[in-house]
Image: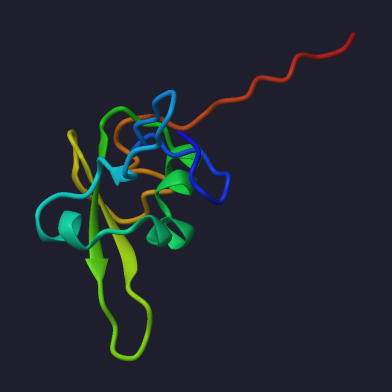
Length: 109
């Protein structure tokens, strides 16, 4: 579903009826973060960009809300892989799931 800023996010959901629009929710947040989550936090959320860069089915994202002193709260993402544990860079992936790409250039004779 589209976020308020126009990006696509697979975890953002708003129940829309014919005559009303429900409360927005993020299906990725759980526990204490779910109670403090607001739709305004989606503007700084890296999850739509991560999912656009890496659509690995083995990678799972975990979202948590970080509060900073005298600054706005931010969403922080941690990624884990079914095959390899923790993922250092979720934009790239763990490196174990998919092998390197090989390009073959044919001769034009």
